[in-house]
Length: 131
Image (cartoon, rainbow, N blue to C red; front, top):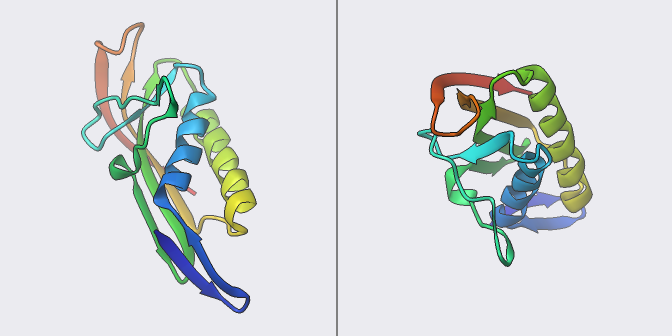
């Protein structure tokens, strides 16, 4: 649980809420961007009941300054890193603002690899994009 005390009271947000917003942002790319763990292994995004809880594979922290988020993705070769990350940053910021009334203080997306037609052919990368 993330807690932030303001002049209006205490705001409590589960890390699962933030991880679901991130999963939805990745899902917007319809299989061309995949959420991974720190080592680049793809994570399951959905099961038959909806989104899978992946907050353990993400760094989600709250301090007095706001929410800090860092997560890992695998992208298909040919996609624009800046276009993909900017779209994800915008989506996540809007959804977190709607859910909590706060904007993230810092977000980082780490591209762990690029793949061709199949995820089996992955070129390892370690590109971190921050906002």
